[in-house]
Length: 175
Image: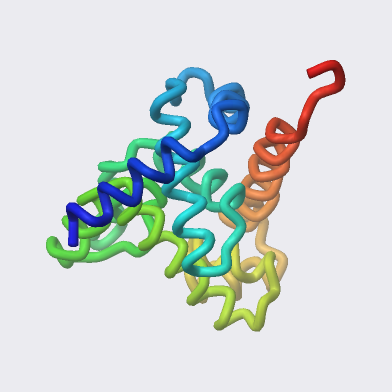
């Protein structure tokens, strides 16, 4: 299965328009090379297709959560860790962590599935979805009460980065 995933990633990377990878790199030049941008774009595109999720949003979350480090492991409260490029679910489960960091695509799929779970829980409300992704029901409730927490601003951060990525992908005049 891992070999199939890697082959799929290789094919998707090759088929990714170089201009889109270069444009993604321009949005995070310290974090991406042309090759890593193409790989992240391919992984986000595949995960987005499989979960009906906007690849630009997946890339935006990956930038915020890990600066595109696909083997990222972030320490969380309660001696938990969040793992993978999108650091989706804090866990004590070493196997889940190993799965999310096993490949770039695995990390994007874990994040996209977690995002989809929150979209379903929030009945498609994008703000609720992104707050839930960032901090669960406790953060959703706190933000709904009007608390001024950093996590309540996460939807704006994710949306702004996704919009910047989408703008970068647009054809430029004279090219």
